[in-house]
Length: 157
Image (cartoon, rainbow, N blue to C red; front, side, top):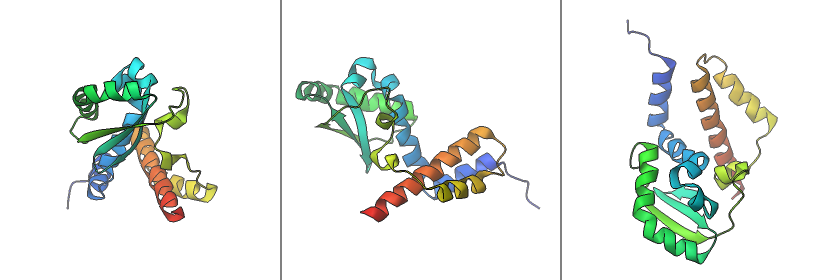
């Protein structure tokens, strides 16, 4: 008989096998943008999306876009140091509206602004109810919510 595994190791293995761990980890950039790039850069830029290991960033003004272009290697390094591994391979800048830092929408990718119905949230809560470790429970809940929101946004396209 095999030795029992911890829930954490089972979840880690599951997330890796489903290739969900990398996107989840990269989206942590939204919540730590000020910390990663510094307050002055964060006031004029914010992450918009991640596709194929490319981080797309909205920038408030063309002058800032040019400045950030010069800082691109440094930004890439800081982002990947924050992530703990080289998950972002390139950065692309574009002019866009920058939300105030106090707004939670600036910390989430656009697809995550979609609301989920109560039934879906209840189903997610039933799935995680047996997990005792609060940090694992919270992390898995976030993954499942993000996945459901992404699926919802894909169905509307």
